[in-house]
Image (cartoon, rainbow, N blue to C red):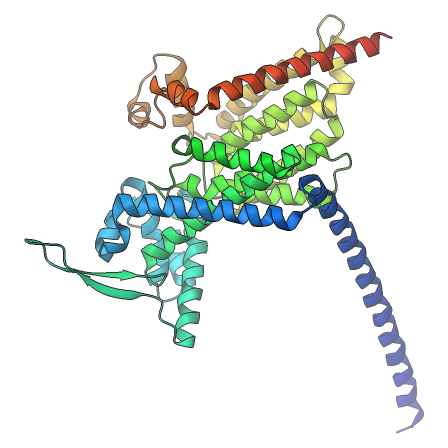
Length: 472
């Protein structure tokens, strides 16, 4: 063998290593630029929130801890949850709450995490003899995540020999037999409830940051948290019904609103902000089937401020793109759930995007006698209704017809079994007469009316000023 050959190969290998080093240096430089831009944006956000960010974060943490303690205490005082036996704790989850918890229990007690997920995706008990994917049907991603956390937690604690629960014999008086009651995160029901309360405690921390960001000082955050506590019974029911779907979704809605506010206030919207908005949308929609209606009203409001001229079409298009991406991601994660793609939310996104794309070309041809804002508004409204009807007709989807019937029952005298069953619940029935009185006592209604009137006045002044400047 010739000795020169290895030498030539060594030279080639050295050049490859050098090229690899250059490539890594280039990638590292790009990462540094990205980090620098991110910190610059974060710095702007922090500066807008408060100059003493550490104090703001401490106050936000205190607000979250107070809310966590409050809802935990209310739940314990109502159920005496820590003194119940395992069976009694499971029975404390009434109605659909017990259904959601049962799937968490299936994954926890399965031989492995993946076998547990397979069991809930091929369930033959809930709608026997049918085999259904309950992960798709009932939005069970929270139970899947919590079950994985529980298995990781108990596995790690067992590995290190750390006790996760303490069991006691509770004597319940004459005529009642004693029961064994276990406390600690090692108990599945206690772990399940604790994680929900922790998430909703963090939500109030985000509320504090949101109020601080909107007002520019910490007093705004304190006022926001105070108003939330004053109207606590009207704002959440997590302390009475922890496993319900909104208990998992609501905290991510607050994060989503904070991100959307930041995007609306920022002159140049970058990709990272839109990605964060999409992620928060996904986390909000996955656990709760009614989240799409909340986002529908939100996007409609953003479209309204576009019509009034407060934001430009480019920013609105970016927001709509972020919503479209999050809707598509949820559609995939929900195994092609037809209710998402044929919803009013999806129809509104398509119609509003079409108006932004085609409006400048075609709608202006018909705005000689009709104001453009009226034409765009009515086009979006009726276009959404028509497109929703056509999509349901084409794809033969009627899974969400009970939602439309519920709205019809509110506006007309329509009644069927589903609407009668829904309206039996206070949440879906008409507003009680005592509700406005409670809002008056907490000063919520007067403050909202004042803010509404001031907003209308400011919007009218802005429109008139813009009209005068255009006439010049």
